[in-house]
Image (cartoon, rainbow, N blue to C red; front, side, top):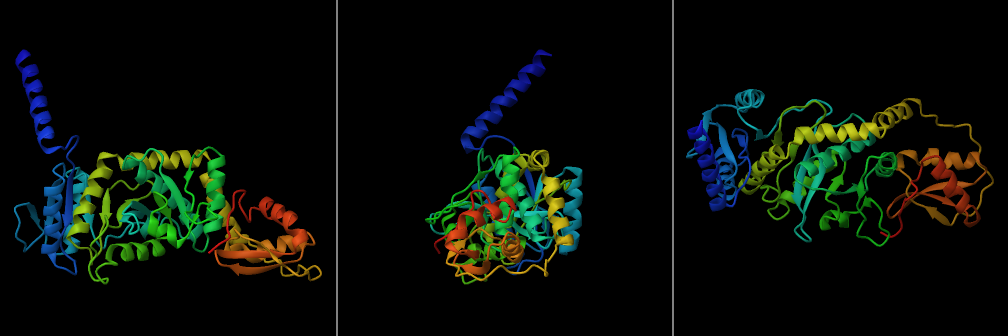
Length: 394
């Protein structure tokens, strides 16, 4: 018994000495990388894996492919489909903690949270999301994307990540729903736009600056942004910057799979493998479950159901008669484009003349100066604008 104790102590000191020498502490996740399918050839992916091993000694790598030269462990797979089958098997059996691949089909409800390096100040920023789909409706998917982004940020060690909503169609409605969750106890640290008028709805400037730690958007927009951030210095053919399209996140999805593209180059491959290893060490699966549990406690399911019901049962109110026309000079921003006509009609019902318009930061409701305060209150009560809604300068 004494000899066993001495042996364990000796092993501990050996591991500690190795960690001090390499500067790497903690677990050493084994990450699989599939090689077939790259526009730059399999050897480019091998180069990325070799950079990862050299740069991040606390990552163990196994390659799934063929016809390459490397000293790294290589399992023979001739096609991407064959590599995916082997990858899924290894993930299921626990032979690897995570994987990096391309062209993987996630089920509905699962989408990826990518990470970019913003050009203005070199800050890392999560894009939630970049591939897959969290839900079939944009607003519902973006609400879920917020929770997914927070889960990934917490897995990466962020204690209080800031969250912003990209100013695209549906953003104002997403903001309202996230504010409801926040008020109900699902704490969200909303970012403030770097632009003069502030607010949690982010402008293009905020993308370049990396204003929030997490930028919430829809998948198609996020995918486009990922490609722009990754390849803007190379002319588009070679993704040289960032950490790839990130891990697939979704309820009951139990595999850690990070996505790259056919255009991803060796630097991105290396960073994607670090992303996968960090997510494994940070227990991403557990963080997803925790995040969704907290969001549901604050009414996530109810909000998602309301969004679906509103879509199904939307009343166009074509029979509403407009009040007498007035000169409208005051803008009320913060209206989602999907709700513009409905918001206008809600004011007409209260005998307030209003028109719809498009300001430089998005849709607006136009009313007369004497009606603006009452109109704002009606729109707030109807959840057409948020209590902290902002908007103003371009």
